[in-house]
Amino acid sequence: MSDKKLATVAVRTGIESDTQHNAVVPPIYLTSTYSFPQLGDLPQYDYSRSGNPTRNMLADALSELEGGAGGVVTNCGTAAINLLASALLGPDDLVIAPHDCYGGTYRLFNTRAGKGDFKVEFIDQSDPDVLAAALARKPKLVWVETPSNPLLRVVDVAELCEQSKQVGALVAVDNTFLSPILQQPIALGADFVVHSTTKYINGHSDVVGGVLISKEAEQAENIAWWANCIGATGAPFDAYLTLRGLRTLAPRMKMHEENSAQVLAYLQTQSLVGQIYHPSQPDHPGHDIAVKQQKGFGSMLSFELAGSYRQLEVFVSALTCFSLAESLGGTESLIAHPASMTHRAMSDEAQVEAGIKPSLLRLSVGLEDPSDLIADLEQAFKQAAEVTE
Ligand SMILES: *Cc1c(COP(=O)(O)O)cnc(C)c1O
Image (cartoon, rainbow, N blue to C red; front, top):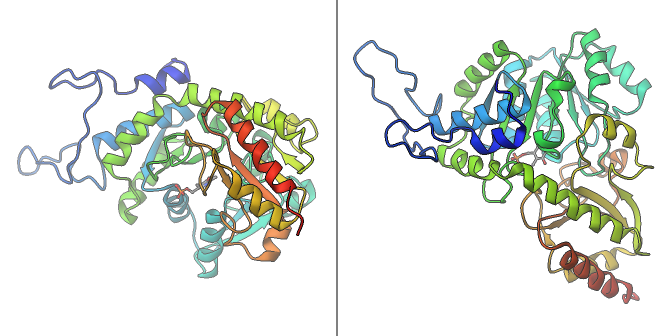
């Protein structure tokens, strides 16, 4: 592992590594197969499901950024989660997951548990009594998502890792919302880090991808074996694009954050804005923990529209600088309605349990000029305020 700063690792991994033509930018290897030098000699690469130089370069960069021993780049973030479950869990093993985790994570764990592949319990990890009772059942894996989606609840990773270790549980952290630039779970004690690289890491909303990084080399090897076994690895072209996006991760994260701070300050002045959810807010649950374990508050934020459902509809459709879309972390700003979009796989009861109200809206603040974003919100709030039905 190098002693370089994160921005430098993101920019320079693989640069000037081409020995054939001295290309500064590493070439892309679009091949499914590789020739064997001679009969009986197993080359480093034999088939691109198991290994590909472009994909491995991205995996190495991400693993280094997260301080892991190795990573596997998968075809999407969900595949990375599924890969960990496949590699680690049997029918008697229990997973403790947060009740407000990413909707697809909830669906995956819930469905596979329903088939008897493993057991799962969804809990409020910020409630110490509930957490202690769940850990007493000796889970194999504790799944953490912090800040959580869409309410940005914060979990104390170091504390949870400490408690999990005492009962022999492994800890995996979904670090999608902050990226390694703003949070490094392995340094806080986690055994695995997962990303949907679809989001900030690629950062341009044009690739779906994921990565699973292991703290220990032995686990990394085991997981690479499983990735080949179940066919979870990503395409080289996607890896190439993601590595290109990764180059600017550090400055993008900084600017995303600056823009979201300005949007947040504006939202606080609006009468149609109810509760705001963002770790930067001093009254946000987990604000102090965020200050301790994060290197920034991130740029995802949610708020409740203090008005009728009709007003919410008018507000959302009046926006021109925020596209109504799922996903996050791209250069363009997005707005989502978790109850009907990202979290629709959850039953109404599960949504209530997780605190996801029909009035909740989630913003992924992009890299447009913040004054345009604020002006756009302003005109949309005006239109919503005029709704009388
Ligand atoms: C998007 C997302 C995922 C799933 O990733 P895909 O690339 O869409 O499969 C998992 N966790 C979080 C927090 C996400 O935002």
